[in-house]
Length: 240
Ligand code: FES
Image (tube, rainbow, N blue to C red; front, side, top):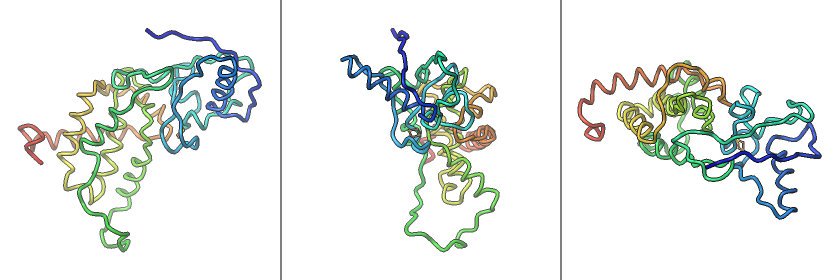
């Protein structure tokens, strides 16, 4: 059973990031011989998707299109009380403090988030023509860093935005199309097995996403799932 702890953060500069605030608190806790607050991080540049916590009820805090590591203390008031919680979802079991197990996302990617086409060295740019609109939509979807804020923000703890982004960035391009149908069936099947909820069009995922991934990707996922399900009446594994 979890519980909240109260920590006083002193000597915090407005230019510090949220993770630096946790560093300062942890330094003091360590000096006092106490357990530091466990939290995930790596790049601290908004790139890797490792950081994340719910701050005052909002995934990655109050600033739009911002990861926790890029959220700075100048966006908070002096003496403000911050309520910091881990991502909460059946699909993300809590390991310790703010650290959750997101290997469910890895298993969803393993189920279909890859291509079998050999990419080799960089081909001549015009060898495979891709409509500009599709290449831009694919690139927008590929911006997903897999942080899990979409799940944390959704009242159903749905992972649809994550799955839809990963699906879109492959299925919109010619290299992703050979496995396009089996990919959507397998990734959605794995998502369901991991215990994530369904989408009920709350749009909270898009609002919390640090990369502003559009819910239009979820609509594409639903369309592609319906189309693929018509072609594969038996189990997805019978198709490839
Ligand atoms: S630590 Fe890499 S995105 Fe925040």
